[in-house]
Length: 511
Image (cartoon, rainbow, N blue to C red; front, side, top):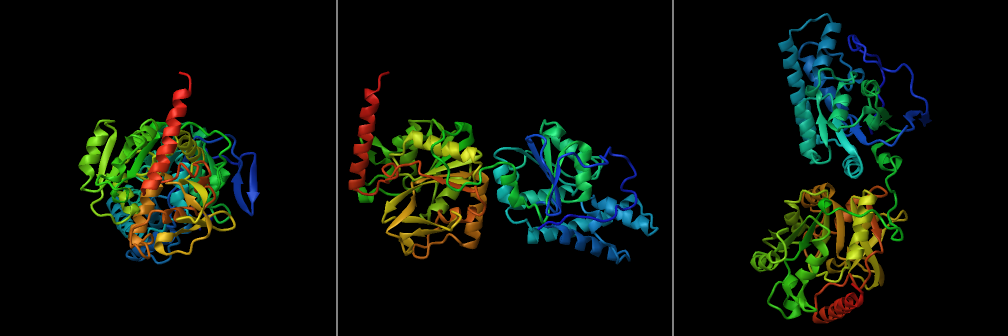
């Protein structure tokens, strides 16, 4: 956990006045000795410091400084009071205190050496605080986020690239972007300007004295991240839903198509249906499954990506071309699992959210999808999974006493299944960034590899993401009949009767 920084201010740090307030604002409260104050207004922007707030970089920076200073004969350096300052300013002040005046190029050389050491070790260790990335992802669904650091451009960009959070922040301000580093207000003022917000509309998340001084001088409100107030507390403190089971009784906000891309894994064959065509081109109630799915998805998403096998890609592409130019085909060369299929489909996605629907779910209602998408956006969830209870489930979500999904049992992987269980409905909604990072982690660690099938399973992602209340939402918003996939002639006949009945009901509604 990051720790509150205290200690003296080095000489020269306050050689200028930055209009810092002499007293804390009215409304400050004490939480276990940790200082946090009530917000005067709901913020529009959240401005995050990096070192000590998002990454536990203090030991790495301290060691890098110590090594550089030892190279010039200084072995009593203490980092705590310098946290949050520019590297060059730290070096200049330390040398001045020891009566050594260096030329600018000498300071630059030592600063560059320290930065190289720190960046190398940060890349190797990547000491991101627990829950930092998931909290950023959730908050970015409601607020404008900025990263504001006194660090060098190379260190800030390294953090962003390693953790794939470039899309999460609307703007990034590093030490080279401003004339004066913290405790000057320049960085936070510049971030607010780039977000087109007043500083009074911004909440700063800081851990160091110099950073808090900078934020207050800029006119921002500040919350200190420390041992009594962690990143994991932020979503709840800022009013994001902390429910794991969403209410289906209240109509949520209407989703916008430009926020969504649909991915349809559809590499399967129609062999069990007695067809030599791709399963998604099998006809039910006089239309292909693809047509039923495009009716459902095109009005609600900016684009649809169908993941196909090489042998079926042309046929699916030709069928989709007659419907819309917003349908793309992604290839899955080998059928090695649903997680692999989704990875193939998500490669070109640039929307904030992704809707996954299996390529044989022809009966999902538009109203059910609208409800799921609205709940997902309103709750700022990382994932939303509509579920149903059914007898002899093929999938079962095992939960702990707090409702967290701790395991996903799968009959095909030999897991012991309950006689009744909570199953998926073939529809899944994700924040794109959270899904991409989780897929990469699962592939790298092999954590989604099936025990029997040896396939890359997708569903274990849900237990990986469900670490904080509100990260993963579920709700009984898709009925069991809607969730029936088309695998056998009996299932096809059942769904045909449902779809024909809906079509007949629609004809009876007066125009």
